[in-house]
Amino acid sequence: MKMSKIVRTQANFLYPFILIFGFYIIAHGHLTPGGGFQGGAVIATGIALIAVAYKYNDIKKWLKKTRLTATEGIGLLAFIITAICGFGTSFFYNWLANSGLLFGDRVPYGINPGYLNTGGVLPIMNLAVGIEVLGGLGVIIVYMLSYVKEVK
Image (cartoon, rainbow, N blue to C red):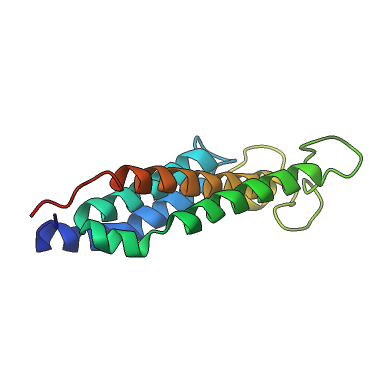
């Protein structure tokens, strides 16, 4: 069953903001409460919002189980590769910290206002976890929708 035009319009309006907020939570996970899991769950909530607002046949065309499963696998693979990149030191070694490279700026002494580039490999791991959770929860949403019968 398709929702009213008002519900669909509001879902279309809110969806980009939900995505931006989810990626904000992922990006700031090493500085604030939150991270990959919470941000991925927020983005999956946006998927659930769109799934509620539109007909099942439309959602079935847009959300493919294979794409979401591939997204979950890519997130898991990125997490494992980032964890292995310690190269002879230890598993999950923060090899980017204080390196001057991406996310490797030095943390200043004193009060830290929360610079995004000081996390080392943590933002990369948060992004990988966010992608994995988005794929996993998206698959769960699609499987739950597959049991919904079309009401006429």
